[in-house]
Image 1 (tube, rainbow, N blue to C red):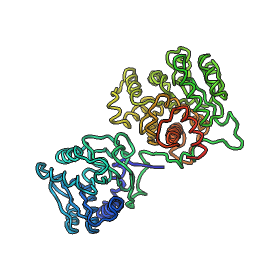
Image 2 (cartoon, rainbow, N blue to C red):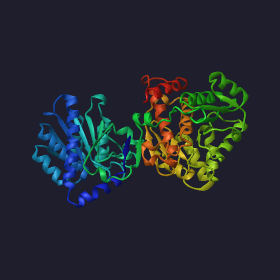
Image 3 (cartoon, helix red, strand yellow):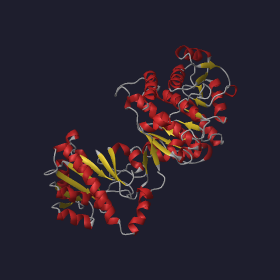
Image 4 (cartoon, helix red, strand yellow):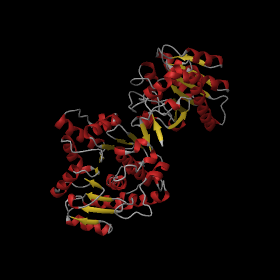
Length: 521
């Protein structure tokens, strides 16, 4: 499992060490780890370090100091190292070490000709070390640093450009939130210290981070509970609900599905099929006669009826996919939202969920699954009915973690904000981030399939408060719904990549889920 922290958490963990005068030792450890990664990348690019052209973009603080010390180590191994100073000063000890090792400094803080010269050096470099802004920075690059990065990006040669290594975070990416302000030099690898920063795994900033490597500093035992988690394949294999020898179809998890309508019957077919393929003990579908007939033809395992939700026994519901313009389905959705049984609330049920939340009818057992456009509508409903902010889609996409958490707090439900990186925010503050899917998942029906998978995961843990105890204390109790949602997002993503990158229609994706769960990855 990947765990990540805010910059403030890491700085607080460092404080006792700094108070004991261990700051220089911590910086040297960070710089040494940074230099090792740079050396590895240089060998991969040109087989040796000696003679390599390295440019360190350095700011005025400790992040710049890390970069300068790393540059000094590379210079000591034969690299030609130039530090481009974009501020009015340099970290004094780091600058002295670089000069002593034979490195040079180019002041570019005044812009003009020096800045253009710096851009030429960057573009001709074998490796660029971005050490301008660290975890304590607020806002993005400004002044000469922003001018330099813009000048470089305007002429960036693409695949033949320098290797870019970011020091702790790419400058301009917020360490805590992943928000991006101003220009950012995309990193091939980000070398982070003590613990990964949450912003490296949060959109939109995660797209600028490349591979994330962590250098241990010796303060890790002082770190608090992480601010963010990401499940990896081994976690999914260990945590996915699986039957035991004593299991039967009812104890394994019965999934109820209120999906489809005469206008959109396909959503019900994809959702129910995915729940079956994900291993539900039983799937019950409620809907109109024509849609029920199609569901039973394509998935004869499904029990289909026109019952009211109160009249059937399930461990979890999936409501909303394709359930548009059908009064009977809307009535069923309302009953599920008002009830106490866990539910995945998708697509056509999201507006009703927002209205129910304003009346206090939702809780942590409910899991809302909007994309950014749907979350805009949910927050607009909440703002209209009970106050609060109503951001537009662009604002949500600029700070998705903020708004996913806001919606979770406002509704009392888990919010799964779908995207290339999907965020799972729980009202108790738990935040997970999954980026497992292929870009080809951006297709009609993909969300219906995810909803079915998620319903199975939710049903499998609904009656066991310790279902995910193997993940740690944080995964007990109300956080189970968030873990189940993250498991489903991960499995959905793995299924999309099972046969390589390419088109994966939802019907094929559902079949791939079986293979993913058999493989345990």
